[in-house]
Image (spheres, rainbow, N blue to C red):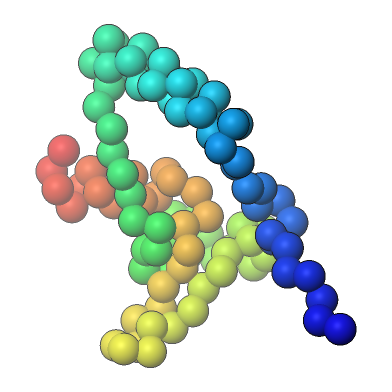
Length: 98
């Protein structure tokens, strides 16, 4: 008998009834932020690994235990799923002269 596939622990599904509530919440927060002059910035979910090792430090719990890194098989570039947004945000600001 095959085992039932479930979501990854800590990664919860947001079902339709609850998703409607979260959409309303998001719209409310976006409206408030916009009224204070904030604008959205969307960062890639994958960034070059050296960005995080340099920003966070090579010997930290985030780098050693909490980052999922891999080598892109297409071009050999080391990549990491974004563990937090600060380093990517600073990279975007510098790269695009914001």
